[in-house]
Structure formats: structure tokens, C-alpha cells
Length: 180
Ligand SMILES: CC(C)(COP(=O)(O)OP(=O)(O)OC[C@H]1O[C@@H](n2cnc3c(N)ncnc32)[C@H](O)[C@@H]1OP(=O)(O)O)[C@@H](O)C(=O)NCCC(=O)NCCS
Image (cartoon, rainbow, N blue to C red; front, side, top):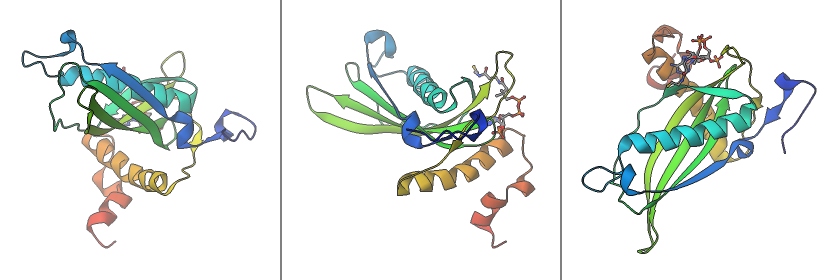
């Protein structure tokens, strides 16, 4: 359960409240001519899983603001089952960061490999598409606390790359490299 202390902006949620699991079977229409899953199809499924997770946290319509770099280390084959686990790592003012872990499983052979990890950012919007405040997120486990702390630095990197933040203002990011 999450804590409700009055109005929408004082709701405090935990990462488990946004935990989402999505499964997909890789079918012929999802693959390239080598019978491997197309990267774009996987990104599409990840966008859906992450959006569901962000909506669970925000209880609002959300839009994808950014997708961090995603690399494909292993080919995923026709017939594999994809499992995407998503949860919110940190809520800012109107945006949330969602982390995903993606697994590829071949059920007949019993093999299961980690395919990707990725972070997507969503912004909660009203019916006119204007950003609106989201509930706070309170991490509980050691892993969630670590992801929560790292989210601030990841946010600074993506805002700098998007031209929405001056690198000089990225205090936490700079502290990683310089003793300031
Ligand atoms: C995302 C969007 C709502 C941001 O609107 P905006 O007017 O630029 O709003 P602001 O600059 O005030 O930023 C609002 C929030 O978005 C975040 N944001 C904006 N650009 C971002 C980016 N490139 N990466 C991560 N977060 C971003 C800001 O950090 C801010 O978060 P905060 O309130 O938690 O601090 C707007 O750009 C939009 O609607 N984009 C299209 C979304 C869409 O259609 N997605 C699907 C693409 S196919």
C-alpha cells in the first residue's frame, strides 16, 4: 500500500507500487531475416511496460520524455519469451525515471539470459498535455535506495544531452569526477 496524507501532491509511493511485469512471445512478424528479434520491436515493448509502470506511480496519463542508451548484447531468437520488469526508481517534480530489466527465455531448452537494462523517463500530463506534479517516491530496499541516488546523476546527464541543463549546474554529476 502507499501512504496518502491529504491531496494528490502529498501521496508517497514506493517502487513496489509501480512494479510491472510484461511477457511477449517472439513471433515471425517480430523478427529480421536472421530470425532474431528486431531491436525496434523490443524498444516498443519496453516503452509500453515502462509507461504502465509510470502510470501506476502517477495515476495520470504519461508521455515518454526520453529513452537512455540501450545496447543489445545478445540476439533474441524466434520463439523466445521476453520478460520485461519495470519499476519507478525516482520521482522528480513532474517526471519519473523507470528502470527496466529485460530477460529472454527459451522455454524448451530452459535457458534464460539477461538481455538489457534501460532507463526511460516519463512526464505526467493533464488532458491538454501540460506537465503536472507526480507523487513522491520513497525507496525501501538497499537496491532501491542505490537506484534512487543514481537517478539524480542520470537525470543530469540526460538533461545536459537534451540541451535542457547547463553542465555547470550538474552538481552531483560533477562531484563524481571532481572533488568539489
Ligand atoms: C515531455 C514534455 C511533456 C516536456 O514538456 P516541456 O514543456 O518541455 O516541459 P518542461 O521543460 O517544463 O519539463 C517538464 C519535465 O520534463 C522533463 N524533461 C523534459 N525534457 C526531458 C528530457 N529530454 N529527458 C528527460 N526529462 C525531460 C523535465 O526535466 C521536467 O521534469 P521535472 O518537472 O520532474 O523536473 C514535452 O516535451 C512533450 O510533450 N514531448 C512529447 C512527448 C511524446 O509525445 N512522447 C512520445 C514520443 S513518440
